[in-house]
Length: 156
Length: 286
Image 1: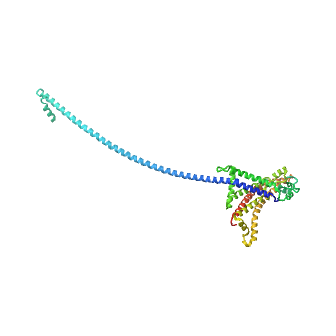
Image 2 (image 1 turned 180 degrees about the vertical axis):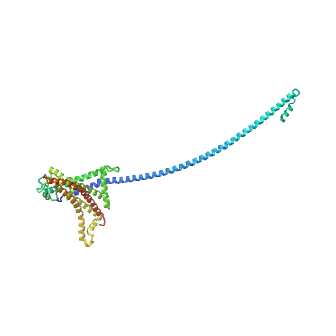
Image 3 (image 1 turned 135 degrees about the vertical axis):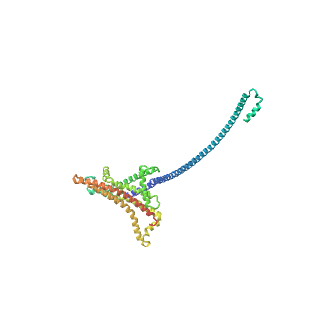
């Protein structure tokens, strides 16, 4: 329990240990701690940024989806309008075509009627001539009376 | 328990005697084999047990911490590094809490004080008789395993802290500022003798209280372990002694668990007071 040179030994050891600790222990660990702290802070900031970006992107996606929907609606409406227009046009064309065909048919019918009438007239004239021939047999010469017959035919 | 021939008083004395190496009365160098011999050696003797155990513990502390420091990386820390970083952050927070100036000595100083004193105090938890018995078998007359229960060790550290405090006081405030602080406060120029007396006591009280607080706590703790051990030491096999033996186990356990608190607390107090003293050395106005 006496005070002796142990005191000096202890003091010297203490100073040496503190020096060693100050030189080789404290700085590297402190540096690692500070660096890690910084890295963690950076990581957290990056995470925050990422979350923000994601939010922004999802908002943009919703927006563009909305826009696309609107555009699609417009396109459909336009297409419907166009279809109606096309149908209208087709209807008009068909009507025109039909009218033309009808007119053609009418003209043909008219022509046919005329031809039939002409034929009928011819036949009637021939019949009349045949009748007259039968009646007049000998006296009437077909060639001599052709002029008369033709005028007769026209009169019918 | 270290021999049937010992009385209780002898047992206690035996436990409280350091292994002292110095000049024997006959002029040769050697180990003191009694308290009287150790006393006669005077100042130029050395307590081998205190010195060697303190040195080993300091090296153990620095070995593990230096290893962790070498491997310190920014990545995920492993077991040892985690522990070391935890201790260092604890010390760093304590330093930041009470030390306001800028000085890169203070934090490593605080860490060394805390870890080293804690390790030395923890030697108190080793069973009180084991190491002295082993030493006895090897041929060493005495051994005390708790360096901080030796006033030489605690004063050794507090003197170093004291010199650091004085050094930084002079470095920060200049020699004049330091002397002025000692002589011109708190009564001004007219009260010079009173000032010197008061501030001198104030200054000297720092290392003395620092050393005596730690020494007193560890000495008392060791003493109580010795007294508890004495209970079971009555070797005669009677009913009473076996009851005493049982109570020794219970009491030792209880005191050891309580002592863990004291051990840590004293290391922490030594560290905190050192930081505070260093902070005071850096304050311009007292």
